[in-house]
Amino acid sequence: MNNLSKYLTLLEEPGLGLLLTSRYSRHYGAQADIAEGVAVVTKAGCRYFTDSRYIEAAQKGISGFEVLEVNMHNSYTQRLLDAIRDFGITALGYEEHSMTAGELLRYQDTLGVKLIPMDGKINSFRSVKEPWELERMQKAQDITDEAFSKVLKRIHAGMTEKEVQAELIYCLYACGGEGLSFDPIVVSGPNTSLPHGVATDRVIEPGDFITMDFGVIWHGYCSDMTRTVAVGYATEEMKKVYDTVLKAQLAGIAAIRVGATGQEVDGAARKVIADAGYGEFFGHSFGHSLGLEVHENPGCSPRNPEPMAENVVTSAEPGIYLPGKFGVRIEDVLIFKENGSENLTHSPKELIII
Ligand code: ZN
Ligand code: ZN
Image (spheres, protein in one colour):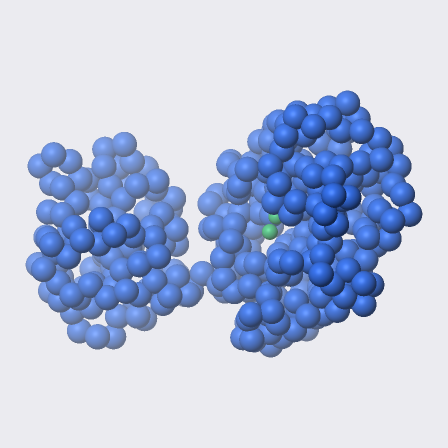
């Protein structure tokens, strides 16, 4: 089923349409990434509005929608009012999690139809990926793998975290990334106990861990990966913690299969860390889903009792963070399959000492 037909299944009620305002839902429905615009989906017809900066790309890239330009003669409001009249719309489902209060008030004042918060339903389809979406995610992850092997050759003691971050960003683009999933995290030495620390001017020394968490966007889809490497040497304690995180990640991955709940997958990894005595140092959840955005639902977390469906994507990223000492995180991205999982990430996971 194409994505637009999925949206149409939400429109059984006569007169109901969808108002797609977020970049992600528009991208998902129109299967083309246009930075700015508004789209309307109804059973009577679908329209996509954008301005002169994007109109050519929209007309070339979008299928399933009538694409119309907004300009000084035809504002977004006017285009929406025309669609409401032409398609007999009496209510519009909107995305309450991405619309500002100001935008909602403006729509309430001008459109004259009932506005219904439908974010959960509109964006629910994104959790199960289509084969073509998985292909894009594999490509994004391949680029990330390649960038990791490339950046390892460029890192050495004496560089600052910021210099490593700059090299990493260079490699991500040089290997084919079209954008970054997020600002890469590069932390070293004692800063590695900060799960989402920001790169600083700290100079990397022998005996440090470096944790790098990074990903690219390729054809709209995100990758995500973390590796922790040691510089020069690793102490016995560093090796023990690294080994525990790796075992926890493998235990979590082994629990991934269709029907397993987020809690079960998280719990399998968390048990390994708790049994090793580090339970209090693993504060975040095992994994999050990703796709058009780097953080999507559903999550492999202690708070998710829902069973997972086939072709749900998750990160697998346990960590142990010892304040004032060091931290380790290892992250892959996997697909839920009937009898297990498929790992999109192929970089080695045994401790690398550079
Ligand atoms: Zn990550
Ligand atoms: Zn992640």
